[in-house]
Image (cartoon, rainbow, N blue to C red; front, side):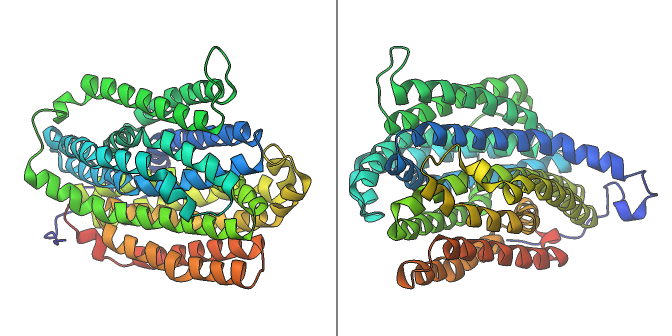
Length: 462
């Protein structure tokens, strides 16, 4: 990681240096124009997960638990590939800020090549190894039976997921996040229809149960890939899209920025898989509840992540113009707005937890287990959102290595060991497990806030 020479500021003045009302509204409009499509896409993605959870929940607790654990196992498989999005976004935003339009899509070309090279062998590994690997995570045979097949079906789309994340990083980096939103809407509508048909065997389709949910998701992912390519051929060709193979320098730069983000995702996904494994050792009911809690958690946290991705683009573009002060201001502006939004979104979970859990948990004893953990999650989410936005701002600036180290340390040195001790060892139950998880997230926020206050990240060259 090299350090750039200081450049004269070429960016608009920061909010603190302009009259009240003169800069706040334009900056707010800029944030919302970039963030809302990302937020909408992410919310739609989790709404789809909730629909899948609702449909699979009709098959019983074991099916719900198996799909939940397999979903995180699949997330673990995809982690290194999804890190491509951060690298593509950071480079494309920086090139746009520097005015090098013809080089803006070069990182996307590299991301597509890496997605294919990494994704193909991963698909073979998971599809043929799932029946051996998945039973290592849980010892309840009904859960294993569901999880193996679902994971195999999801593995069929690993290459497409990598390609889609590369496109997501590019469109977010160049400020055209609405394309990502449109693509996700198409993909999710297709997913609901196809998964429903394959789960329950309607409209002439085979009745596949939970396997059908996994296959439906894979088919919909490839539909999204097709939409992305159509968009890129119509819009990104002047920016360098598919105009020759990416150079070794582009690939090296992309790997330098993407690898820490991918490793961070890998350890996060591994940590969540370990967390679900720990929950599974406490009981099947607890595992089923946690599957629902995670989906409700994501419904609230994904808007914060969407604002974070917007912050990464705005920070990268400001640094490309040579203004570290403006980059810092963009991070704070986005973070304040995101925290306010999440604080409103968590109110229903605090006041009406049973109402939110009831559509997914038909057994009353299982439902009762989730009430207090859901309230704990809602209390901590606004603070978690602050750290999430600033973390993505740091990644957008090219500071991916340090953010990776912080995330991995808090999860694996705090959350996972404490969860194991308090759960399976001392038997404190589901509330203690989720308290461990949220505590690690709050520590993350404190560290990322301290990192943002310092100036070293503004001098990183991308």
